[in-house]
Image 1: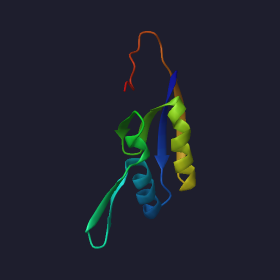
Image 2: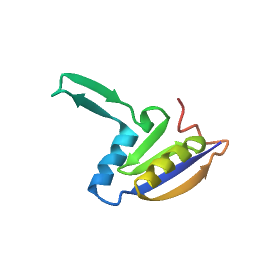
Image 3: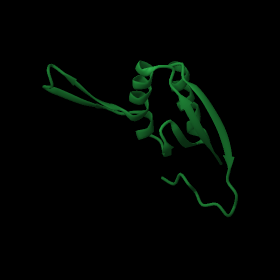
Image 4: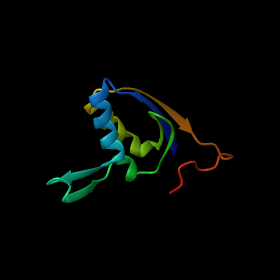
Length: 94
């Protein structure tokens, strides 16, 4: 099993907010705050590590979901695959 480091850059501020909401989730309020809903993002559902702003480490099988979101909002991205060795511990253990 390998892992993928992904670095991305949103095209503009509005797309940045949309990507952030899709990845991290958000609180949705309606009727002037009377009703509140927790909208989950992709990163709440899959194991990951966030090293810096816009730098994520994911399992290879979860990587395609991230790429779909980034392409949907027109973000530039670079993905690099990391092969695990026998000496290395599991980074994404959940």
